[in-house]
Image (cartoon, rainbow, N blue to C red; front, side, top):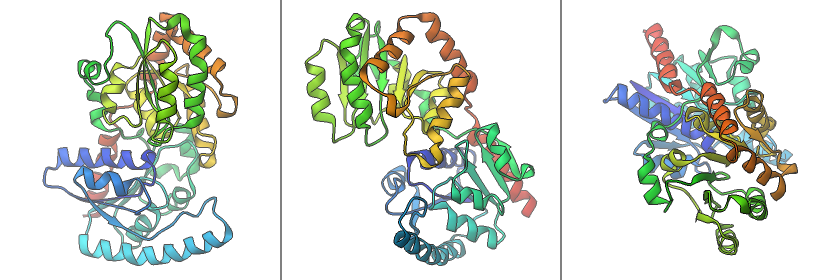
Length: 366
């Protein structure tokens, strides 16, 4: 199989693509895979380290930009279409996957114009602009939520879930205890706000610790702060009697998940897919500036099933977050029910389903 995986920008778009690539490689050891993205997206840092080839295109974002930037975006799109045509001609893919974000648009569009099978992934409840347009012309659409089906031509839509990295499911708890300097008998709270951290979450946690003193001998914390907040957050932890491992970035995420009794984080599609696949109890704090408010929609879907607690960013403070933490960790029944609802919500075989759809499209073309 020769496949192009186009898109990225954020981890929510990129990591499902990495999961797809991993599954294709496992199924087809001789497969050739090329990622297509931009130098400004997360893919420029992640993909070269993953061992895959990355082709860069010039396209720039459109949604939420000024009038001048929108003009530049249109001009960059025209240039990118020619760049994508060149990539297609030199690589000759059997199929093109669009994993979301503006970087996916020109490649998927050019592939459809060249009658190459195409699939787009929509991880959020409400599709972004690129996928709304592409949905009209692609061969198949893989969605995470049933509500998303109504935005597309139903005969093209497959309810697959969001692909997650297989290594996330394979975390080693003993390794985690060693890496993060943990104690086996304590409950572990895992806190992160994305690769760059989230100051609002960091501040709320620090402000909430004094309310959690009754749990200080029962819990331990793994806290990813982001580079910019690391020093002051670390200093604040030193003032209070909590066992905590504070890091600017967590590289061993599978291990961090494996040992977590409670996850406190944003509600991006990939993160939600990971915590539900693992059946973790969570407190979700949707990023308030996400396009189409999709993070809040993601969180509300879990909340409606009893699979999480949710705190809106504008309401977040130390007292509120501490009450949520105490509610979950002080009552084993509450925590267990949330875990059961979470794992019932999760899907672990999305990548396999999407690759099977791709295989069907390739056979149909032949």
